[in-house]
Amino acid sequence: MSWMVCGGCVLRQGRIAPGEVALRGGRIVADAAPARRFDAAGLLVLPGIVDLHGDAHERAVQPRPNVDFPARFALPDAAAQMLAAGITTAYMGVTLSWEPGLRSLQAFEAMLAALRAPPPGPDLRVHLRFEADNLAAAPAALRAMAAGEVHLLGFNDHTPSILKKLGNPKDLGKYAGRAGVGEAEFLALARAAEAGRAEAPALRVTMARAARAAGIPMLSHDDATLEDRAMFRALGATICEFPMAEAVAVDARAAGEAVVMGAPNVVRGGSHLGWASAAPLAERGLVTVLASDYHWPALPAAPFRLAARGAMGLAAAWALVSSNAADALGLTDRGRIEAGMRGDLVLMTEAGEVCAVFAGGSLAWMAPGAAARIGQ
Image (tube, rainbow, N blue to C red; front, top):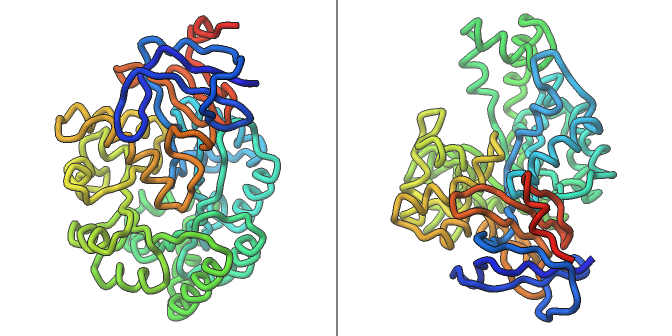
């Protein structure tokens, strides 16, 4: 079906102005051939959101500790929630850890299987968050990368921080519950992972080599020091995700690299872990991409929060969730409203509420009452 989105204000080439957008064959087109009309009067017509890292789908798979649903059952619900947040391209953060349960090899392979027949709507991709000392799962990860089932490789290393927390009974219970095992068993597994850490550097090199061979972009996660960033840069990780120190972000930007922080950080006014506040860093150009992290609705809200602070216009702020993210990932067919681009649009009120979403040229989601805007 062809569509003409008319009557709204369109974000094109860095400015928002009255205009129309034509969609045909899944793409944005320049000509206005006969098409069904969507009345966007009073709305902002923005490029679809590209989410570089979101793991809220884990709550659809495991809504409570020890309560699990199959990935095939959970994925349509997750996709619908993404669309409601304006996300048209989602790099799902699938963690492959030494932990059993939610982040296990079995869960990873089940998600890959579910994604072979994905639900309609957003373009769902895999951001493989590979734990550094998960030696046993490396062959499966390498196979998935070679098969084209992984689209972004993230280098995770959470074992040291997990071990520090396990002396706290509350934290130990949380991790064991997520993994679906007893506390003593989880503690033993964590210590076994720690025992194999000497092999982690060589495995990182192997993983990076495989990613380069497959054309998969790479990112580092939670870089604490300049030495961390230099190490991952040498491996080919051109995206710096959630740097733990401002100096790391400065260094990454000086090297022309993308710096990612969480949209929930912007919406809440700071990190839930007590790290740097993303909003002022974005205003200084030190954060170039925002990701949903653990909360999809924060992504469409964050640019409006930034614009309300007064240091960035909405067009520049929206780039953090659209064109900048696409550029960081090497995606040349989305993130902007231009002829030839994928037909991904988010129609929003000036108050920052999502009204309708077009994904791949199709009307994929509408807010209650928005159907009245559809003409013949």
